[in-house]
Image (cartoon, rainbow, N blue to C red; front, top):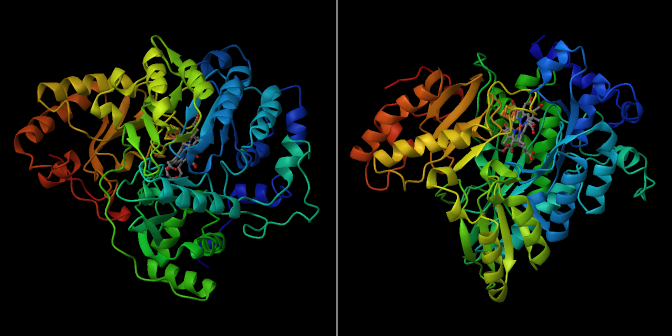
Length: 570
Ligand code: SRM
Ligand code: SF4
């Protein structure tokens, strides 16, 4: 028998015994003796958008004092396409201050996260989120996660249409279990008398997490190639003709395990707008049936495709659909970041893309982001869009109201020009310490000061105004999509990072390891000579990532399987 016949992973047992994600979560919530959940429930709570964590800054000290870890929970709130109303913002702001650690985190998948919610406050926090007409179901777990969509401020009609597809797909792939309502909302909203079945997922859901996104060229802001399933809008004369379908993207890998690697998605074919949900359902159910349930490190769609081939996947999709996908249509991407500042859309309204460093909404010194956005949410008549790069768009502002919003941004010290260089505007860092249980090095708390120092080096070489993407994560899981940044920094241990170079500026080529396990001084020493050469030798309009490949600093990576092949270090 093949490796597929080996033992199922333990999470499979937990899912199978969970009665559609119920487990003993109700009992765990009531247990007064600990701030934690029972072990199996910590896996199931993820499907409800809830992660058990502990404060890693005090972990050792508490151990020394023989106290249990300082447990609290992270709550992830789904926001399909990142679109939320000002009322929803104000609710998140209130819940963050009264139930969590007083900050809001905008994620790399256009969702909200709250950190530091203690067990006793979990239920009222979830109920508050539900009252604001949002939910946390399927924000995590082995299911389809928050569906992303390009926020594309300038194109109002196209945005409305593509966003509607994102919402429809999100709805279509939401688990059907009533467990969420029973546990968190006391069954209040329960109107459906049907028995609890999961028509798409089945009793054991997917082998692993699954991610999908819609993108509208030319901006690849959602990083469509990092998604399990992507839909690239083909727009002609302002009309969405359909979508190129991409499959098999993913970032996560494990240190020292070359069988795990980041992989960019392949374009599989083209479908019309009416066919989107059917195509998605076919891909999801194929992954449900063929994904590896024995090894969670080999369980994403990217490995199913590399094991069986793209042609196999396409024909299995077509067999399930009963019709054939069309050939992909031409498209082009120019970058994977956000476009900042005021932009006017085709319907005459205005949108301000606001830089939010690493997605963290809080007041810090003169930059009073949390208070400022609360004031803006109160005054603003349009809505907000969370971007795929951890930023926020103040959306649908009329001519008459634009000045007032600008004034408020200025008053609270949060205008883009008040805070950021081009490098910083193209930066992202994952959460890492102190909440992430998997972090090996700092990320969100460290990248800002490292950028100060890299900016100094860029200044010396006359490159201060160059846009380059830089992304940091505290471990190789890749939550800030670091393997498609021109400068990728991935935590290996306290103060130590792997430096990756050579990704495409549009998120269309993976980077490659350039230096391993280096500290801040070594990072600067590695980058400095490359910046010097880039300033002198670059071609007109050449991006830093392309340059690094052209001069042979790193080899070009053409497929995920090549990611670990020997590096030509310069
Ligand atoms: Fe992630 C696990 C944070 C986007 C790949 N991710 C985690 C956990 C939940 C740690 C854990 O399992 O205990 C982190 C919680 C930290 C904390 O304290 O908040 C975490 N991931 C995040 C967020 C908040 C990073 C951010 O700074 O914004 C992002 C939340 C997105 C959302 O709203 O749903 C986030 N994670 C991503 C992305 C980017 C994306 O989806 O576009 C990736 C890479 C794409 C991919 O999935 O391949 C990503 N996260 C992972 C992985 C590796 C998965 C793999 O296939 O190997 C893990 C670990 C795991 O699943 O075992 C992980
Ligand atoms: Fe945590 Fe690693 Fe994700 Fe950063 S990349 S949030 S350290 S799992």
